[in-house]
Length: 447
Image 1 (cartoon, rainbow, N blue to C red):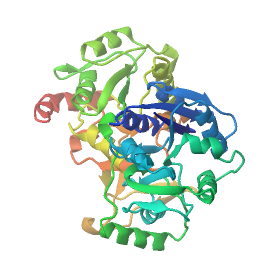
Image 2: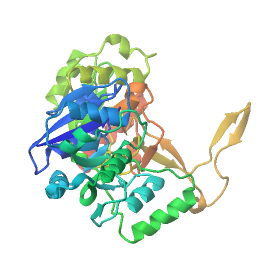
Image 3: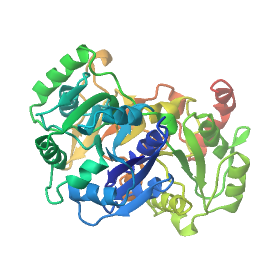
């Protein structure tokens, strides 16, 4: 039996993907123990969705945390896996354990591969350190507990150092090598790992090294499996719903959510029971009603989103990704939502928003004077555009940013919207009149 020890600290972005990959292994005789260092996000809640044993620790030291998890385990072999590492395939565990046929083998560590959006500093380090040839180490004490396996009987004789603040794995490996054991590097037991093992501030040199490594096809573009994420669409609605063309205004947004191949739940957040009943008929979920106070004109939308996320999580709905959509944008292209979700995941962004490219002259007020923001009168082909965010048309982000009230985070991606109909926001009477005259024909041609 194998005991898989996963150390976590605020890993809600990765833990679901990590555990899904673990429980998909073809080697089935294992238990999973999560050693959590007081996560303040939803790491623990998401981990509880799986058959795991949870241990909470107050003070984090790497060896001490592993020893605590191992002490609570019962496997003959101990697998150490970081909460932000994702096994590449379902042979990962069997490829680790097969190396213990040699009784002199005390520990095995596997390959770590960068994701497509891993920073170049870290890509370089991972590609240089974790090669494609298996090796048996009798003197080299390099060992890495982000992805490793050891014998329990060896651990009983030589536990991890409880006091060191870093590289507990190498300290342990050096000691077992001194006792006559060996260490094996197994490249077929591979995980995706966002973080690197070193840092280097020489960005230009790092960039060049990574490009050379990629040109040798040592680095394939690794992407997360978007379909395994719990993607939740959240549609905030204030007051009653009017019709636009042949349909209620709300229906256009819900219909796009239903067309998405990634969205698992479409949730409408409203204080109006009539709107709630309509939303359910249209195929959305309304698991809660929000208070009327949250619909006041002076209440910021971020407050509504925070409340809605809290209510979802009370009902054990834990989104991995949130798609925020406003019903005032009915002219939404069919593929827009999924394109935004895919970009968020593939590029490791904090959020993605659609934008309109603006090439016209732009000014801003500065110190009481108008200051020109664009590049002046240049031919359009030579002019760099400003990008105007259409956040109501769509905002794909992570729950942690909503919880913090920031919504977008720092690393923002954009998708340029080319259809001018998408810019139309139905709020005023004139906008509604314009939209009503074209919505039915546009919708029929954009399914």
